[in-house]
Length: 548
Image 1 (cartoon, rainbow, N blue to C red):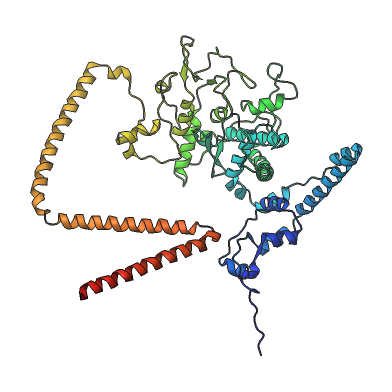
Image 2: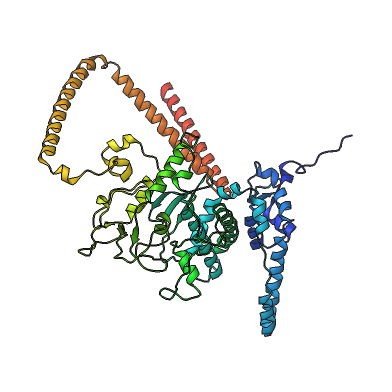
């Protein structure tokens, strides 16, 4: 006689495990379990049949793959988390007893762990880390802008700021920037990192408040992982350019005018305007992104190489000077090697004759220097997106600049022909060069424009007359078919509206919680029964009226 098979001993019932069971197996608290899952990249899973996994019960639970939990059981960071928990208990007990020397000793010997082995485990190849670099940069730039409050340690904020500045230095040295967009949420950048397009956002340098609905413990865990990952990526990127890492300045700086001696290196590095030291001990020779180093245009990546060459040449042959309110990391990153007006890293004074363009954000009045173009900050961003130097007439201080839309959206040539749509297109998409106001003021040009308008008006009148005649001829032919077509269209629209309403109702029913879904089913059943009984009574009434 064969042995009877018991229920819930195979299949999905043994493949998944609930979070409560996982905590009991690993002997961890919920906070430590969340931290370990974030570091190892283990996330909850949704089984196909919840009742089968939960042994017939419909209680909502969080499930994980059993193999993932077994994988977490061999992580050495888990033992460090237990050591930290025991260490905090010892420090608390010593503080309550008043043994301050013991508390000092425990603080000096606080257990620490590293995440280097997890980075190598999750990203065995450098290309894998580059593909996951967008989330890393977004979070690190966010932490670098956070205020120094109790929610986030100051060391973590400084580490994020230092790593992001190092990455921007590489973007400047490699000329890897491709697109930039300014919005109310911050700056959006796109860079080419080893052939992979990486997009990230940088918040504005404003006073950020501490939101009450954000759990900074989880964000700090993600930031711990991403800062370690960004350090590995920066080292590989700097090595590919022959730069020393950690980065060092090639020239000596004088901190007497700007900051203290201990903060000089960090402040001048953050200015993004100083050359870096190469591995050989001197300033980095040449630039790896010069136009001659790009592949041939007849190769497979001809368009990408041509765009990169055009963007590399766009910033050559001019010197840019930023006013103090306009300067910052985004402006220095998109205009590499250009001086700022004041602060650490400035090279030229405002009256220097080598400056060709000066960025200002307010009208200057009579304080202008000859031989210099004054533009608004948007001019720099549009030049980067178009890959060439745009005319400065539309970007003069005090004038409304052209629309600045996202370069990540695709614009076609047909969009430039529309009225309202053309007004919303960016400068480079609507026109290649602005019209010369001197040419427009000439009488001959104005007369030619008036004549062209007259010819266009006559042609439009002829086309309208021909269209009216054709419509009159075909009106009798389509007269019989028009009612049927209108009826079919109305019926189709009614049917589509009913289908859309039914689909919306079905989606709303799916979003109901389980504890409310049973009550909703009872209500629907009761309404259907009442409608059925009402229909039966109405049918009986009609039969009696016929027989009478």
